[in-house]
Image 1 (cartoon, rainbow, N blue to C red):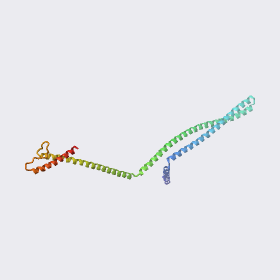
Image 2: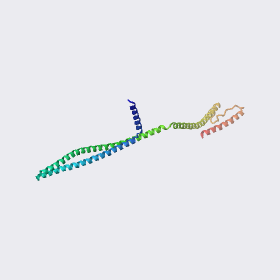
Image 3: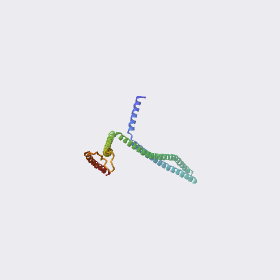
Image 4: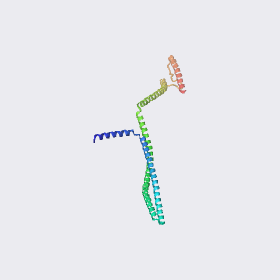
Length: 263
């Protein structure tokens, strides 16, 4: 391969690439339909001209055919009158008109066939143009959808999601912290209330145990008597007085406890 051939191929390849990149599907399809419509106009004009020629040839054929028939009748009339010379001249004219009519008949048949062929081509081209318009609209819609999708993907790819996701993560951490604080406050409030009731229950148990211990140390109490009272030996009056005072305090304390229990 020569150098010039290689250069020519490179140039043509680059030109084709530039043209391909510059092609807009919508514009190319629109131009293709316009070109087809222009061809349709030209074909219609050709059909119209051919039909006009056919009509003119048909008229000439009819005239020459009529002329031949007329001279045939004149030749017969001349023979009837006994004028052979005039009859011969009429037959000469008739022959010329008949030959012209035959030529025109051949031309008319050719033109009639051409008109039929052009009409078929015209119908086919109209059908192709209608199909091309439908296909153009479909391809145009597909091209627009593809371009819209390309722009959407380009927009999505250019959007930076790092900052947005970081904001979501920060807000999630903040919500988790708020939930933890709320739960801690709730547990603290519940714990304080439970502790108070636990102290009350604990205090009541100690008092009951203290009373049982006093009853045990007193060696048993008479029915209806104060369980804290103890039998003292004679000569211990002062101790007995002190024990009586303590028993009075215990009775009052016990009555208060019973009141609190029954309330």
